[in-house]
Image 1: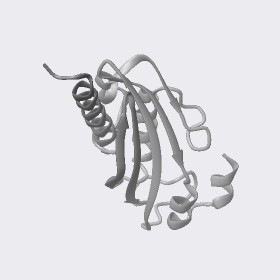
Image 2: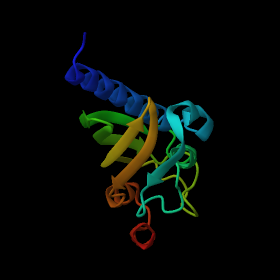
Image 3: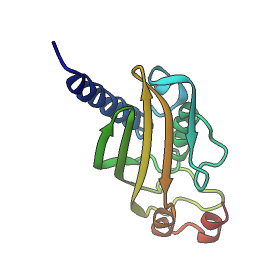
Image 4: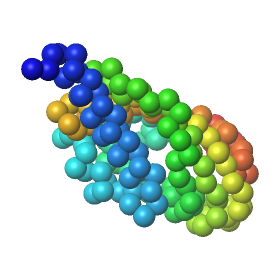
Length: 157
């Protein structure tokens, strides 16, 4: 019979896989949408990223908004999960992503064709096999400066 530490490790591994699946969908320009991640999200879940997505409050809304961003950066993709660990229901993640501003305009700025690479960090919480919380910290200044987007706009949000 497995002891409680075996069950805990198994739950932590499942939580890591759950986060990875969510991130792979949210960073796929062909799939990122509320509908595509709904099966991974618990009812009443919360998303927090006040400096980058202040009007987004659920994991489904984040996937939807991220899908809109990928209309400007259609080759946006994850390079790596740099740090990925779990402790009970919590999963910590630091990742690297990159993409090119090669499609839709950013506001009045036509596609610059410039490429950017940046990092972000996230904390997720899972319960009963579904995501209930996602807290994201992302310094978007690095991405915006590499794309040549107005830094005042980045800092004002």
